Image (cartoon, rainbow, N blue to C red; front, side, top):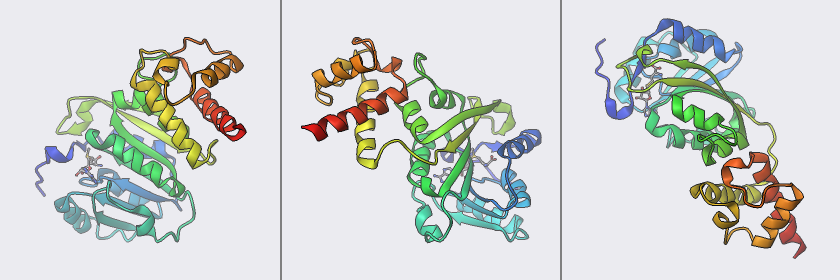
Amino acid sequence: MYFKAKKRLGQNFLIDANIQAKIIAACQLEVDESVLEIGPGKGALTRLLCQKVARVVAVEIDKDLCAMLTQDFATFKNLQVVNQDILKFDLGFFLLRKVPLKCFTVIGNIPYYISTPVLQRLLRYRTYIKRAFLTVQKEFARRIVATPGSKEYGSLSCYIQYYTFPRILFTLGRRCFSPAPSVDSSFLKLEFKETLPLGSNDERMLFKIIRNAFSQRRKKLHNSLEGIVPKEALHEFFQLRTIDPGARAETLHLNDFIALAKFLKKKIKKT
Ligand code: SAM
């Protein structure tokens, strides 16, 4: 059936059959798995997923595509097509909390303009998610896996690396898609961590520190964190961890930021 791609919904369909197969192989899916697919489009991956796993929930914003999928894939009894915006989709409510924790694998070739909000959404529902495989813009993937000292390293790297172990599995050239986008993509794996080092209150403090530290990345930390971390406390912390007192955000590892949040918590408790 002819379908005109809608640019405003980031519709670039994966047409390269070798890459489709490579993606499914890279996910190393088990037969009893449940998959949440974001933006199934015309179903290039959906078909392969339905043939492979126990359950596929495919959330697609475009009602025309949902109608196509429902009709074309009627024989797959393990497929549930949900016509919703993934940014509004309440995964917890949808599942009525009756599923085991960490039971979903998320797979999505997501439009570039919603990459960050989609990730925020997935982290919000992290109790249900074991891992995610996402096709994202190459530069965006590099920012996620970046480490201290590189120019891509920033608050996004720390935010995602706090909750997950991210890894770029391979690159997809723009010609794998139709219509071809103007940029190349990367296939990214996010393994969600089982346990996290901080409680939710301390996480708030951690991300406040990280956001402020990187919002003025050229500044030294004792200036960019002014008003958030008392100067003397920061000085004491730097001495304890043998960090250069003139350090900037880009030289600190995520573990340093976590240690700083813990250190401040102890200080506040003492006073
Ligand atoms: N997975 C298909 C493939 O690989 O060929 C389609 C990928 S295409 C890049 C992105 C898909 O996400 C489109 O089908 C688009 O309609 C859908 N989409 C865009 N925004 C969405 C949203 N907010 N919620 C759910 N689906 C969305």
